[in-house]
Length: 96
Image (cartoon, helix red, strand yellow):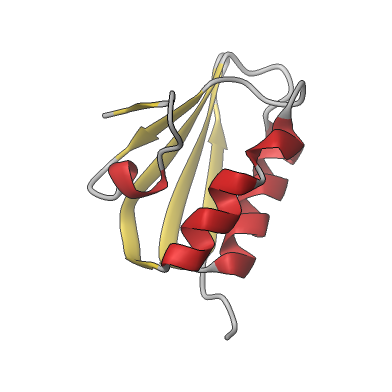
């Protein structure tokens, strides 16, 4: 299945904001992980906005959560926002 995920990135002086739109599947999980690796350097926090996600596939969520170790030392604390925050939030993260 082809991913239709769109990731909009906005960086301000301290934080990075990634707005997710579309469906979140296994391929989307790697897209998000790669975006975090690419843009997190120098940021104080990464906000992942989930309200525009249409569907979160359990496999995509599992791929994302089980590969967060790819970010060790390369990313900042993750903060999940929006209606779907609780579905992507790995244990120990914050969400609003």
